[in-house]
Image 1 (tube, rainbow, N blue to C red):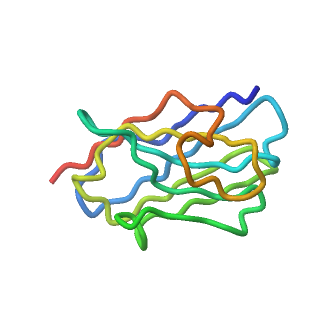
Image 2: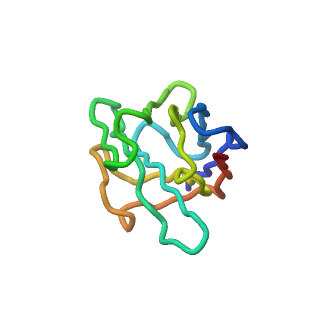
Length: 124
């Protein structure tokens, strides 16, 4: 079992930045690929970014490319999402997730563990 706890959400003005963190506990963190998802009210949960266990590979959805950066520190059992140039359409609950895989996992169904989420609100 892996337990995931997100933090760092909040209210920010458009153009601002936030850094989300996800702390993992339980089984060996470095053996898991990680991902960030988000869900806005009334919308499907959207895949935002992913990172392999070694951090050598990353993936981003088109709408956040160049603005968001996913990273991980396996020694600290954390994965981060640095979000810059935020837009009102980035407003959502953000979730981190862990997958039992060394490589990138690019499907929602491939993730085995989920955090409870952290709210990000971007005002215009």
